[in-house]
Length: 453
Image 1 (cartoon, helix red, strand yellow):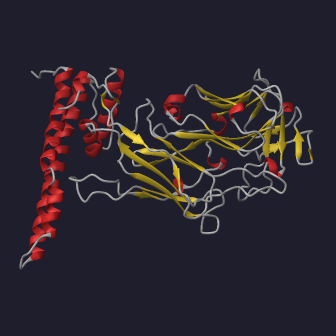
Image 2 (cartoon, rainbow, N blue to C red):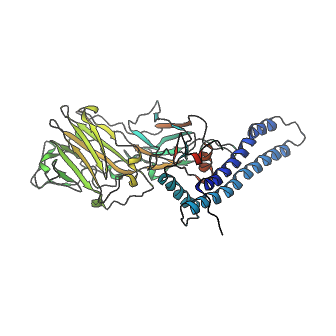
Image 3 (cartoon, helix red, strand yellow):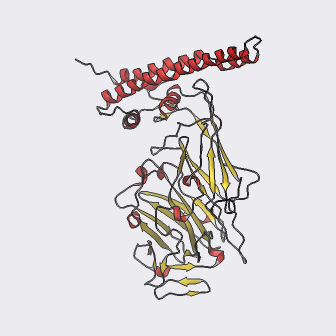
């Protein structure tokens, strides 16, 4: 008759494997440096053979370290999930997902790696005035620690005159060079260039008509580039509501003047923005555009807001069951402001989802007006080396004649330097190295997961 281990005993099976492989790695010690010293100092009639022998020794050592470690760890992880969760998974990624949720349910954590996620550092010669945002937490708020301690570099490789699209410039995301084998962990050694690494605009939003160019004026008409909407006016996809959420388009205007445009997108013949002239709500239910979110992907929200010089009160952003309030006093009046919304766990679908979710912007001011344009609402973020990025271009067509917005230019660059704040977590590090995942963690881990092993 099989004996079911206690939770501590089941966890010990995992930690025993980590103790073994980490001890092996510690035992390797200065082997990489010693091999380099040996090769550099070879004096022999057969230098090539001696070099090959040293490299073969290192290769065999790396293989012996990594492959058996994975073979030992997987059964331990599967056994823990099988005995403690009573679930059927045997595929390692499904097992890790079950284990993660089980630790959350039991309020248990392992030791954190202590990653310092460096801030965005724009290159000194950059022309573009956009911003690149980095999301480094998962849907439960834990740091995404399955990443390399290197510098992530995002470089513009195609702008509007070198094969790219205006305001949708193409970027290359890359880490630093990888180690030659499992003995020496350096950078990720990978790069990404595809549609996901383009600078994002309103058309990348999961919602409909986030540039506000699609509308029906009804009885309204443009005069001097501005249309004061009437009760029968429609802005496609959006509800134009009063503070009580009753329809009232008269609280809004459409503006086609150059100074009221955040960007002049390629292919848009008549750029248009929308203005709240009194307290109002701009709302769109996600069902309008048949939004189908991917739970494993976070979605960025960046609003572009131009408040009049007298605008007061606050903007309240709502997406699903989440809200964030931005005071107008925190924004610069009479110019375009880039307003990022909650770059944390609230951008994951499992965090904000609810029955029939909506996206809404409410202004509760009493004086002035507020213009919105080029809303990047629920834009899929791009994943790289275990973390997520959102590339957002510059805004700011203002003045007469309008000043040119600072578009990303070829070779504009933004870097993010990651490092450890202290000693690395043995368990978390090896989970990353062997299966590419992380578990809930803290500076004070639960007793059964405590380090050192």
